[in-house]
Structures are given as structure tokens and as C-alpha cells.
Image (cartoon, rainbow, N blue to C red; front, side, top):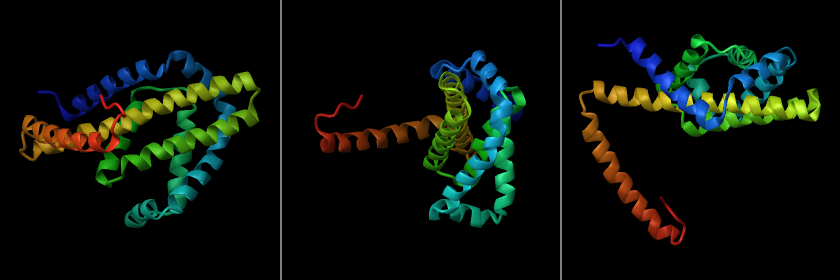
Length: 205
């Protein structure tokens, strides 16, 4: 039987392969970010500032940090390190495993998907503005597209890790996954029918 480490590695590889295909993230994007890395790294200061101003300024996310009892300066330092690795264009197994782990940390601390996806979007927005300040328009567009594609891949890894490990925890608790899936399917079907009555002509596939 495979070890947990092997299971996790194979899981993120499968997710990453799908995400790369669907987002269009390629080795060319990696090269673009490698070439832009030196001038993008200083953007980590502003991104960390905006990121944590947003999270500490919103009561539900500020509460998470209060529960963790961590100093903001420590969190900002970690985010700067993350951003600098992200724009390095150097993506090995350790990099992707690290971002799969982010999903597990969110499970542990009950971080909602809406927080994760919204803040990835916030980082993308800040980077877009900085890129147009730094580069000529054509180069800025290439850097922005590469950055958005890699961060969309990371979003897929984070969310899928949450889902994967949640189901793993359910199986470990003794509940059979097929039973859980049937229960979820039945409840979702009922919920869709409720929304159909509300939405009327809007198509739901």
C-alpha cells in the first residue's frame, strides 16, 4: 500500500496536470516569470501590506489570526517569501507540495474557500497594477498572463487539497465514501430543485 506521502504527491500531480491544461500554464510562462523575477520581487512589500490590511480589516478573517495568536509581522514575512518564490519561475516538486500543504492548513484552521479565492484574486489585482508601472505595455501583458495562470494553478491545488484531505478524514473516521457520496448527491439534487423553482428560465446543467 502506498504511503501517505506518496498518496499526497500523486494527488497534487494529478490536480496540477489538469490545472496546467485548463489554465494554459506552460514552460513559456515559467520563463517569462524567471526573466521578470528580479524586478517583481520588490513588489512583495506592497502585496504583503495590501493582503494583510484586507484580512485584518475584515472581522471574520481577523478572528482567524486572533485565534492563531500570531504576530502580523511574521505573517507578512511569510507572505513576502511566498511571493518571491512565486515570481521566481522556478517550480519544482517542493514548490508544488508546499502549495498542496496550504490547502491542508486551511482544513486545520477552518478557512473558508471564499477567503482563499478572494485573496488570490486580490494578489492578482495588485500585481496587474504593479506590472503596468514597471514594464512597457506588451511586456506587462505577458507577465500578467503568466502570473495569473500560475496563481490559478495554485488556487486549484489549494482547493482540491482541502477537498481531498477532507474526504480522507471522512474515510478514516469509518464512514464509507460511497455512502457519503449518495447522501451528498441526494441533498444536492433537492437543493438544485429548490433553486430551479426560484430561478425559472435560467439554465442549470
